[in-house]
Image (cartoon, rainbow, N blue to C red; front, top):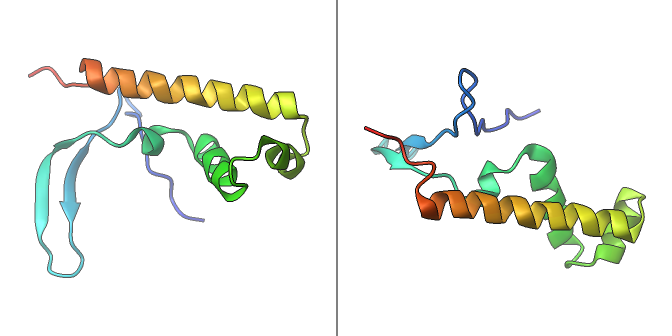
Length: 101
């Protein structure tokens, strides 16, 4: 099993930011403070739901079959996910996740 990318600080719960990227080919290092994309900040279950949604070509009926639940349950889950993504994107655009220096 692959380790999951942590998205929040285990100490205080604040959102984590990418601080360094490394190229395994030429060993170039890039340092800075970068916000993770909203989809990467979702928990593993939500990311899997999004992947399943894409694999089912956006068919909620297919998603209901895949998960063995009713259409309204899948629709509600999607609505919750849409709201969570909007919240994550709003936090970035309003600067809520900016670190005070």
